[in-house]
Structure formats: C-alpha cells, structure tokens
Image (cartoon, rainbow, N blue to C red):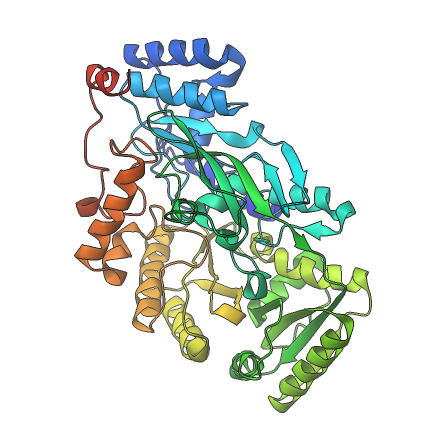
Length: 508
C-alpha cells in the first residue's frame, strides 16, 4: 500500500509541477469566509481547514481524476459534529462530500463544485465488541486492517480485505461496497454490515438495519451500502464478526500458459470447491512483485494462481488435494503449499503489494475494476493485451479470478506527451470490451466519476431513473456527494445549489 500511496503522491506533486491547478481553490469569496466562520463555531477551529493545501489534498483521491474542487475541509470527531457541519452547509446552500482515506480509484471521493468536505478519519474508534450479537460497532474512520488486528485476540476478524486494507477505512468500504481476495467465499462488504448509523442530508440521524435476524421493512441498509456517499454519511457501523477458521492452506499454482491458469479457475469452481480466495497474476505482474516484495513467485511463469482454502482441518486437506489435482490436470508447472504462517504471509504480501510494485515499472498507473464471466477470462485478457499494445502502454494484470473481477493496471509516465490521452483511450476500450463480454462496470471500486458516463451501457433510461429516485428518497435536495455515479441526464449534478434563503426555509 505504501507504493500505491507514494504513486498517488507523485501524481499530485507532478501535476502541481506542470501547473495543473485543478482542485486548488482560492479563499477570497466572502461567502466562503462566512461559511468557514460558521463551521468553526459549530465544531471548533482545530477541526476546520480552508487553506489552499488542505483543499487541494481533499480534492483528489487515488484515481487519475484531477478535476476535484473542494471547499472547506472539516474533521468531525462525533456524530453530533457531522450533523452540525451538515446543518451549516445547508444554511449556506452548499453540498457536502464525505471522505475516508482517499484510496478510492474511481474519483468517488473527489468533490465536485466546492462542497464542504467531511474527512472522517478522526472518527476512528472501535466503539464496542458485541459477542452476543456477533458484531462490532465501529466509527467510519477505523482502518480495515486495524479492525482485524484489534479483533484477533478474540479469535474473530472482519472478512472483507481490499488490497488497500492497510490504509482504507470502514466508511470508505461501506461507500463502495468493497471486496477483496477473500470475498469469493465470504462475500463483499454488504454481507458483513448489519446496521449503520447515518446522518442524512437534513442533518437528522437515523439507523438503517438492526441486529435482529430478520429486520422489518425494506432493506435500507442494503440500499445505503455501495451508494458512494450520495445517500448520507455513515457515522457508526455494526460489522459482522467472522470466526477465524481452524485450518488454512495457501497454495501457489504456476503455469506456462495463461489459458491453463484460467481453465484451472473454472475447473475448481465446477468441481464444487469454493476456496476462500483465487487470485491470478500474469508474468509482468509477477516480475514486478518479485522485484518489489520478494514473495517467492517464479519469474518464468506466464501466470500464477494464489489459492486459499480454509475451514475444518479434514475438509481443508481434502479440498487442497483436489485443487492440486485439478491444477496438475491443467498442465501446472508447479504446485506449492505454504509450509507455515511465515510463508503464507509472504505469498499474500506479494499479492497485496501488486499495486505498489508498479512504482518500479512506471511512475503512474491507471487501474480498472470491471467484472467479466469466469468462462471468458482468456478472451478478455487477450483483448486487454491487444488494446494496451495498440496504445503503446504497459499492462500488469492482477485480479480476483474466482469471481472474474479484473484489475488491469495500465502503467505509464504522465510526463510523456500524449500519455494521459493514450491511457484514457485504452481505459475506455477496456470498459467497453468488458461490457461487450457480458461483464459489469465495477466489482468493488465503485462508479464514481470514472465510469459514470458508461452507466447507460449497463442500464436503461428507466433503470437509471429508478436509481435516481432511490437516491432522492435519501437526499431530496441533492446535497450529498453530487455528480457521482449517475449520468447527468439522471443526476442532480447539474442542478444549481439552492439559495441560502431557500435552504434555511427547508431545513431551518
């Protein structure tokens, strides 16, 4: 993750060196001064920043989207602080954009139109571990990996494990319905969030979902998870506790041909085996990972699969043996099982370091997140290689092979003339190709700004209208993270801010 953040920092600094002023907002507007004064009065001077540096940094996430434009940045410490900031923003007719660690890769955390940005990172407490109900209540700024480490002494963990888990927050995971390698067997964030305390756009506080087995009424919790900040601001989350498995086997399957690796993935699932994870890396990614993390991957393999099975000891041994047999039947060069926890950790370090490893290849990268049918993985990879070669770029493929969630990393140097244009063109073609193959726009990174204008390819006008209506039921005045996900014809992004007097009349 350090490499990922370093690359993001280089992109920010590089754009500043080149004179790119997107996101830098002067503070000479009298209306901004009054807004900042009211925010300071509401939550304290130490929790509000309106200087150019703070606003610039809050205008970007880890994507290559550069047009974010933040207003004042607030750092609430409680639900009351969040509600107070929303009330102030409403009085001034300003939108609100919540923000986690900024590791998002689709521009979802890049604010549009100078909203008040609420950075939730100071709300980072593990509030309660409730073993009776099998949940932990956490604030949204809790870092994903920190939560699992805090739960470890109790023999439980939080299952979703994005590659950015050392930095990403639970609030961000909820916003994007994040996944991770182990979501093949355990499910994405929505399967692990039981209830959410939310501040709505009128500054009221509600709890969506509850701890009962069958909550009454509509699943508003489910509607909120994955809404990318457009339906409100999560201030407390009840996450499901998952028991640590008694036995785990982590296997590295190596192949001389990518098609054999892809065929192995399909054969494992067809055999009725659902591993905890099946991750795939192509040769270019393997070499980059080895240069970066020395994980023990063979550099001569055209592709490797990292397969993990867990559960009761006897069942794990049987499943691991069947996986090895299937791999060998599909011409695996080698099958290796981690001998101990240290070797297992090294193998996973390689996979989790893939994005950071790109820094050894090129200074910048553009990462995609489409989903395609498992049965078409070979076709899709061949298409990606063709697209990237045609645009004179480099691609490293690493992805959740078990559920077809692709993560092609387009590595490039943004200082080269025309590089940005080539990357964007290749990215558009990859998205279109994935949809043509029967895929989906996103598996876990969200739609944000990056894929917003492709939504009409997946959904009809009626579908998009219904999504807009659902969003409006939470946020009728379009004050929460406007301009994201929905194309402009179905979005409130082109609706001007309400006049402050109108806002005061609506919200008091």
